[in-house]
Image 1: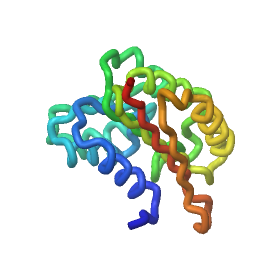
Image 2: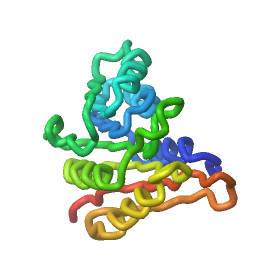
Image 3: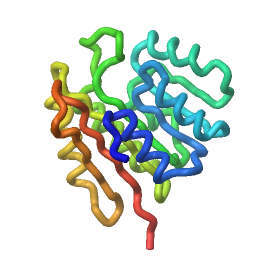
Length: 185
């Protein structure tokens, strides 16, 4: 069945391609929904999540209070290399702003691409990275273009990159990017 929204598409991509997750990065924590999804599928996973807003961290920590394997970090995703050194199975990003939060606090092209570069270096073989790029807020166009340019430049021998867009939906639905690191031959 074809998914009809970005979140469902992202989750289906993960479920179809990655069964075991030991370590995941939630690079845009928000309200903690992506981290919760990871734990729902892989209760023994460890999730390290980043957000620049204390409100987001508090919301997510409350939602995930029953898990011992969640680490929320109040810092930008571009600084992930200060906290994570080991290989990861999954990286997730939902670009834009905190739903229900201040719409002027947004992810930015430069820091998003820095985070992507660092996260993809940590990705295990056959590991996944998902990006939902929301497009309707100020600054989104520049960020989406930067992400597209970054992903187009990835070596096809090292990464498989998919782009899926809901073509006939109104209000500029998000673009989904699914990335898998290839297994070395």
